[in-house]
Image (cartoon, rainbow, N blue to C red; front, side, top):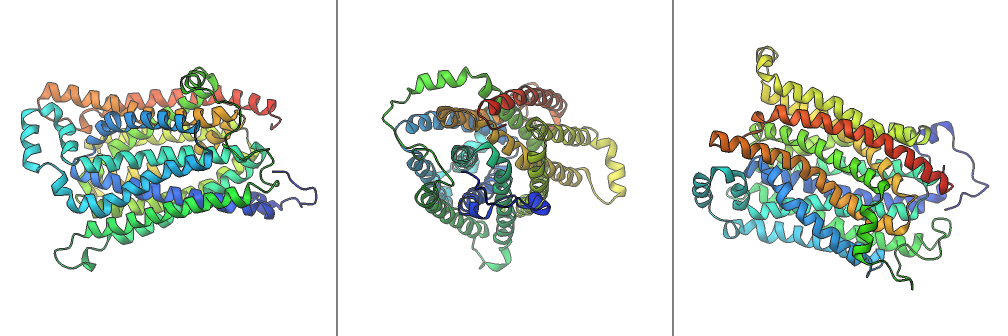
Length: 508
């Protein structure tokens, strides 16, 4: 982890595009590969989970799923993870976290989905229940395809458990702040190529309707290939992780602490209750959690409305997944550009400047999208003259705004958030990060979901029929603006604490 005196300074061009020393490639490339495979899997799972749930129920059902299923499961996961961290080394904890996911996704593609009619209630049964209890329309729709809901929950948790928690916790333990300013953007750059790869692969496997024999379900073939790739990449990820522990962290140039990260020592660790008490009373972690929660609410309300338009435009799983795969490719390209820009912002500017970019972009993009949806009727004649319609325009305008917002999030929000953890002690990096990223992230999305579920329920009760996004847009828009303002204020407050913590750690 020390820079040798004979190393030459970077050239001006290299400082912009590749500020990594040659000897550091032994550490940086395999860690970037782990992030590549984890993000590839997450992107495939994210597109598929939406294809399964939105096309078979409706985008409105996502709020119920996030609130009543994803959030409780995230809390249970956090408690189990915090307990397991007292028992297992970090290496074994990583394997124990990853293995159940790849096992389920393999079973889903090759066992559960082919036999879904046996596992699920009949459509007629669900329809009769919905007629009797209209206020429960969306929860009953989810129950009718419950295995898709389980897939959705685990796909959501993959992003929290493997991407936000396991990888970045490991990176924060073995990287100093001075190194992070150079190599974190490179990690992100490698990872964004996974968006391109997963988008291209998803697009290819979703457009096979004319390549399969008559009577064969093309979506089943798509699932087999995509989930087979997810399982394979999960196994490869564990192999690379093992190699880093054996060949990289034993090299003093990369890790000069007495023991490997997470290896159990003689000192007894704090109990789970005591650890959680310490974590929940930390103002520093509380501000990081506020950033995560505000992001979760903001992206939830924007994507919920956008996906309701996608449902109207694309009616089956393969068409939906094809669009999402192409959307992923564009997101990857935009993220690569933003990471090059963002990496230099991280090196040149203060932490607070880089961290402030994401909420500002979300606020501007959200105002544009919500305003379009609110005034869609007034714009119909203009759109017809342009040869389009409000639904198509909402789909592509929403896609453009989400692409810009997410590329900024990947390039700056994720990296600045992870850098904020580095000055913390090992207990906070492991258990504190589990609480903030897993539970905080889910609370953010479930917070937005709770507001939407409450509004859906109120409108459904008053009207006696199921409610849709169009009927609750004005209220959600107001919530979105308030959350973005709170996000900006939280970044400002955390920025002062990050700078002070880095000074105390000698990393300013």
